[in-house]
Image (cartoon, rainbow, N blue to C red):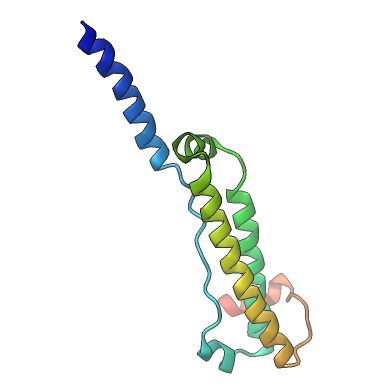
Length: 124
């Protein structure tokens, strides 16, 4: 009888830990500019890439909103895994944005985001 009382709480704890281990949110990453991109990107392509980074940053914020995975992640590691994943994604976006803005300045491009109609033309 005492074995059943001991095993049941252990199973509940093990199940909770397994579920929380899978609860880290997936944010993705973007890369800094490669030498080829730095050499060949036109002002138009730079503007398109800046818009992609902006969209990625919005996606990071959306993913970071509180949900069930946030609660489970907190149970597993006090939310550290989710926080680290978000921080890494944000850092990658900042690096790419900095690279693109530097290239934009070096190429004497006018700052600004292309209208959506122009961005969609490049995707085809």
